[in-house]
Length: 210
Length: 210
DNA sequence: TACCCGATTGACCGATCGGTCAAAACAAAA
DNA sequence: TTTTGTTTTGACCGATCGGTCAATCGGGTA
Image (tube, rainbow over all chains, first blue to last red; front, side, top):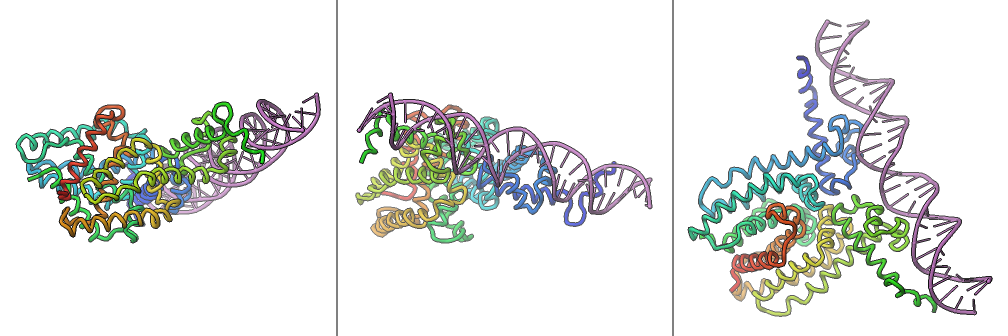
């Protein structure tokens, strides 16, 4: 009955420290993957001794799983309420814009996720075959309806979802390559808007959305 | 004058061993990135003692650079002679099909490249800003001509290249996710053909190629 | 047979890995 | 002040890291 009084103290207390550690870890894991990331590197980036990171997070694996969970919750919070409307143009546009926004808002989290998939998804197999698959299937059903009603071309909805996913994800994951080719350091808001508009235009027209 | 006689002996000799090591290393680096990969894991996969890997490759970094170089040469060998024709439909189709084929032929090499970019391209910065950027720019020029001649919509050619790159790369890099969502273990040739046809159709139509 | 030289390998090096622990520091309650 | 419980931290553990080295092996030449 006396444990919660010292939480929000001075510079934020426990939660603030946890946030600092999580963000530092997200950055390191995103660049080097689970195996390649070291607790020392995470601690250095967080400005704390290594033992302190373990004190708050328990273990490297627990820390990693917390990050995966946090990223998935951030996606769910935004991607879930997309299919409420019945207009393909709006839904697909929303999907593209939302996914693009998420990548810009959480670049390290997106890269972390990519690294996990690249490693064969050892910690995410259940999520992919469960939650995510169901999410995709529900959207596929909606799209099949659209196709039957002649609202768009007869394309495989799963491939369309993959197309949107990959083309938006690219600007986060391959940021280093994109920057090198465009000859600049990071994309401006205008650049992001241009890319989003391009993707909306090409993908919607490409699958014949009326 | 007496060193080359024992090269191609018994089970292939030196080159065969080097190939074994390179392929094993490609697999491990692809899954865990540069830092996350260990020489012991590579040696185990190659069926050799660790010291033998060092004997042939020199160091972890040299081995890694050899793999990056090998993968880039494989791409150059195929992607370079694509723009000889002047018909957008053929060129873009070729690009999509070729890139798709490369991903299927060299999945580990493609993933290795992805992991390197994800890590911020510490070993590939020069290549990205040099060779690759020039390759892209030459294609961009061609596409701008097409746009001027009304052969396709007025879209940013760089974004179009990124779109083709990302959407094809996805089926290698995110293979684990694709398999989980499609509910199968690996894509059949038919699946690959379907995906390729989908991408050709949507992308070509999407940027108004006549 | 004796010799040669590249190939193979186990033992070993210092550094770093993830993780533990106990002592010190600290703020609030008594 | 003393007590209590949390936070902080350096020291340390066994395991593994990338890499070195010397001893051995094994087929060709003399």
